[in-house]
Length: 89
Image (cartoon, one colour):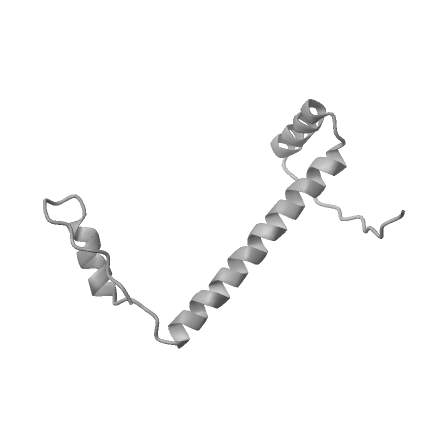
C-alpha cells in the first residue's frame, strides 16, 4: 500500500544533525524515520497550542477572566503564613 509523500528539505545545525544520526543509530531506524517522528510530534504540539489559544480567546470574549490584581494578591500570599485561596472567575 503506497502512501503519498513529499520531500521537504531543511538545513539544520551540524550538532542537531549529529544528534539525529546518533538517535537513528541507537533506535536502529533511518534518519528519515526519526525526522518524521519529530516533525509529527512538533506539529501535534503546535496544533494543540493553537487550539488552546482559541479556547482562551473565547473565554476572554465571554468574560471568563480573573482580575490581574486578584491573581497578584493571591501569588503574593503564597509562602506566607496565611495564603489566600486561588481566585476564581
